[in-house]
Image (cartoon, one colour):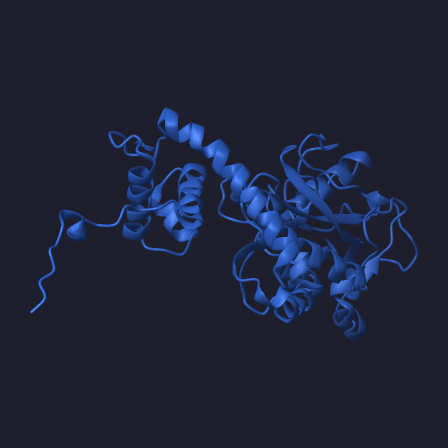
Length: 335
């Protein structure tokens, strides 16, 4: 009979080692400010996230978060570690983009989209994403530009396809084409086929999206420039609702004709020409330049290709904006 002499080390838990998953979890807690938000971001339970941080702290021999506070506040050593983790994750991101085949790319990407894009080339983008990155999960949110940018800044979205420029110099902006907006009305309103002066529209109700939207701001700017005083304004929260109200003869609104060709063919909508033409509206794909999200630049590059192939508008002639380059103007306030 052979006896084995057990030592104390045989019964000790193996010393945890630092791995990329631990560091990524630590990064998102530091970025989002809570264990709960980080758990949702890395698709894990809160107990798993807490366990990873305990293992990381045990491995490094330091405390990374102040446990005496309700929020996940970093200790001095935790703040120091963030700088190293950001560099490591950025290098990992670059490595994955260059080395990993597209059909092997996995993960979740959360994309915010304005309504006009949802009506135009979003289906083609989703189809292209499935073909190019079949193992990537897509989470979509349709909202106003202001709301999407706010969620991007808070870390609740990874990339947005919206109007205007990025919120600061720490964001990359890629052009996603443009679309023409025109005044539209029901033919029964009796507006002439020829181009009319802007003041000719004063007697009709103006239908706009909410006051924080790009749509509302564009109409207000146009009215101010052309000294138009509308007597009645109807505010709604959806471009589809606005178009339905216009096609029912309720009033006039600024709409993209490319999205409503069927209604124009059916005779429920028509373009109202004015002597003060509207400039085209430009879209951008915006994502943070300093965050660990390898899918953001990949899906944005794919969106650029899809938007250029779409027939709703020519690509916008704007350059890439990233860290170190100040955007020429602030982000647009809405759709």
